[in-house]
Length: 442
Image (cartoon, helix red, strand yellow):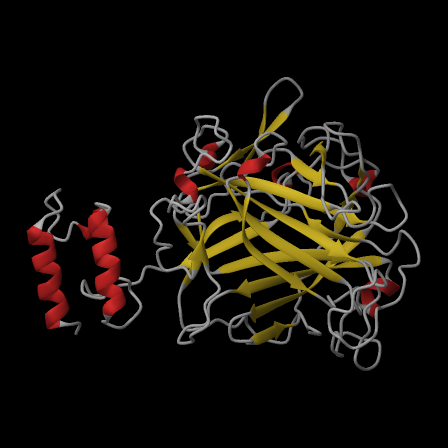
């Protein structure tokens, strides 16, 4: 799958370097400049792909459904109010630079409301590998992609990024993109790196294919999503009610703040590592030096930078916006490359020494601000779907599955099955449902 992507322009430094567990990750803000060169709307369910390049007048595509952001950590310049407009990124995979340089897994985490359906994810990467352009050497040509340069993104239930309670972590979504677009000739010639963004749609409206998922299922019905962790013990226990480490506490809220804990990981695959994802017998060229970097953008949820009065700063998340990126901390985790048995082991929690909007502007010789150790991520959920009462599972048709779903919820005394809203589950709810089902939908 060789892909093409889209464009906006910004400047950035690089947050780079590895450290022992809990030690600050050293920041090198003058290491490189980044130009955000592209964005793509890609529907993995339908195959639809819409590329938007800078200045070409296109807009991102979308299916006929409505999606709304429900969790976001996108702001790349948290210290803009203090005059810092430089954007930073973290070099996840930097060949030859450190013992953790290749095949590490980066994990970030946050909190979200339970029973949240996700039908689209926004991902990003920053890359120094030279891209193979289709024709010529200017940006009017098409990006072909870097042979066998790949990245794997996963979303997890019941995880708050800690070494403790890793037994509660359950996978939800796992997808890998290969032949990722690389550094454009224009940016490479200017000594800059290229940033890419992609909206990955998991649902195709009007299609039988649906890859949407529900984070933090508490009732076993997945709502409108195609799948969820609705049975984690073989006895029908949804992940939101499980205690898989048998500590007497629900796995769903490991930090005790009343919200569901979730996480996401990214792992990059360098060319010539033995992978042939596109089955063309070309394994790609060996990365030459540490300049063959790939990483992800640093971002923060909606909020404000607060000076604490003692030389420290805090990023105060606005939890009242619809897509509040709640639960993100000034910390992320790294897992070692797979060992001989394929296991990845926890290496430690990482940060940049503490978020601070001080240090002086890079343009005037300063070191720049210290970003929060958070990474850009955006989750979308379907908009409100107005279903008639008889279409109980809200799939657009009246059939056995509506009756079955109603009976299941009725037996479980789910609030949705309290059809007459009298606080009881009895004959009157069943009678009213049958009446609505018989009449049908308009």
